[in-house]
Image 1 (cartoon, rainbow, N blue to C red):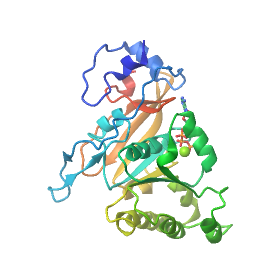
Image 2: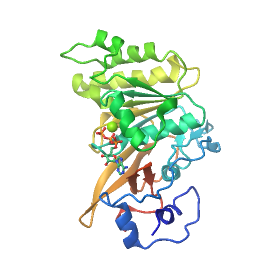
Image 3: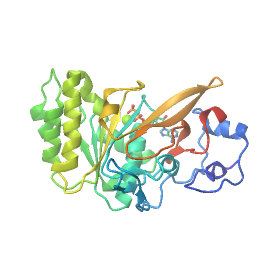
Length: 295
Ligand SMILES: Nc1ncnc2c1ncn2[C@@H]1O[C@H](COP(=O)(O)OP(=O)(O)OP(=O)(O)O)[C@@H](O)[C@H]1O
Ligand SMILES: [Mg+2]
């Protein structure tokens, strides 16, 4: 079976033709299955999705949606992320958090938006290497390397070796670097700061950070993507953001299957079902018309 057949039913609102057998799907979606060479691009057409009306707190707001660059995820989100909001992408090691956030940024760059990626763990050269293996062109992504191996002069000057940097310092570092407007910013992983400070301080720090992108740097709010390397079901960060997307693995009949779940999405309806996803040689693909137990 060609992989295209599997994806034919996964487009936004697309009719499902040539529906593959369940057994075939199972072999395609298992974590360990080989990547078919003909996997199509996961990116959308780079345009902002049609404006969708969703009721805000006052019941009257118009919420502009932006595509994540992953068709199946846009379907689950009922039209994409709400622009200018803060999101958390959480999942265990190797679950695809960096790839997913990069796909969101690349889709923004395609629309002509200014996008930035702050890496706190993975050094820039490794990140570029891994992303270029997926065919991602990062030339339009402003990569800010604040990883421990970076020698960023601002960062080095404020690091206290025994404490690392706190969120307030990090915020002023970002404020200094990102002097110009940014439409989408990803911070990977925000949980880097967690072990360094008491919970109340961490919580306040994250809220201040989100507020910085809401007001300080922009006339328009930036969409903020925070990455959490926690695989706990509920963490403090979950309460502080507008939306949470979780990447998990689940056991189905003795097999391990990758599964994506939208935990919350303020101001919008969303698909609450755990859906299977794959990491292919083109990035993440989500299957919004399949449930994990069905494959
Ligand atoms: N071409 C590919 N085909 C299949 N899977 C791939 C491919 N390239 C990468 N992967 C998967 O993607 C994972 C890495 O993705 P990514 O770096 O986004 O994960 P992460 O959640 O950010 O990990 P970490 O917690 O270590 O930062 C690898 O563990 C691998 O399983
Ligand atoms: Mg990562």
